[in-house]
Length: 409
Ligand SMILES: *Cc1c(COP(=O)(O)O)cnc(C)c1O
Image (tube, rainbow, N blue to C red; front, side):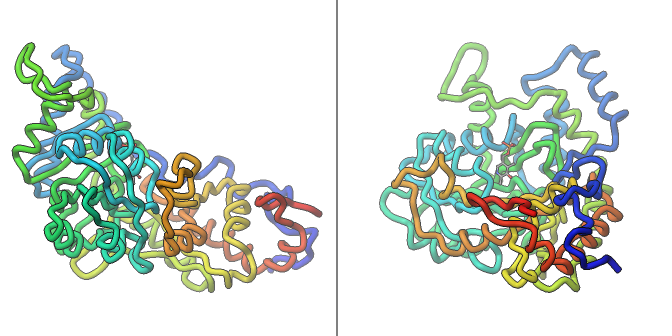
């Protein structure tokens, strides 16, 4: 057993060598098929076709729409632009209801579309938009609900659809985390008026940078295709205020090679997740979240732990600092909640969001995803266990100064 002497704590925070030589990030890019990628890129050179609705983008779109069981897939530069393109094409006005507990791109896309984000609280169980709170925020200025399948957990699509219908609102989803996830035995991608995926390098499936809008609405898809290319219809006829949100052939090449790896990616994510689930099961005060439910399936990309105050007195932020010192780059996603970020400090964005704040103060996202490995996950669990077991001597040597934990002795 480890000695309990405060001076011999085997932690990098106190000067020991880090447990890992190189930083382990949450969701490091995964790509195991360089040769397939190079082969696809070679075709671009052969054709001399590198962007503007090329054959690789088309192939990627058709494979994705088949995989997701949705009629249309419109590939774009990234999800943030995809959300903006979509809100523009839907001709939204006024206010859009969004969760605050999300990556900041969600409300940023609303603002950058000339709309006003109204922050909604989350459900304490799912951590997704609380439909009841959402309904209470609707007024005559509301034009849409933009909900997020956070960490790949599907939203309450049924209730949100009812609310949207009752109030004649558009319903769109930020599905950045939810590629290959299903809800009610249907893949995410076909819910609401449209859904937007991110294919950024640290997402479950990626094209380095990229994204896609999926929808079963053919007219909307057509408008999105024109709008991602400045609104051009034909050679010199521009019918709408579009932008440049095209995906390049080289990005599509990465997508095509990664699409072939999807089963392998999922298997790796699941193994890493399972390793954490086993390792954390017996640590009181740490709960690892699982989003496999009846009729739902999950991609296991995010390893999300909830830390309660009973973690032997170790506060969440101190645990994060201890892990980071060991090169385990744990993150407080999505702390502090967008409504508490400087960009949204203006009174018009402020709301009382008690569940969001409570969850944001407890969450730790651990390094997960297909680029991680199960052995490192086990070692991280041991580190957490060690920290909890040695809480008393650790707490003797640290103090919170100006909101940050510092080693004091
Ligand atoms: C990553 C992410 C985005 C932004 O995606 P990009 O493709 O990088 O623009 C949007 N929303 C959420 C929830 C994300 O995690």
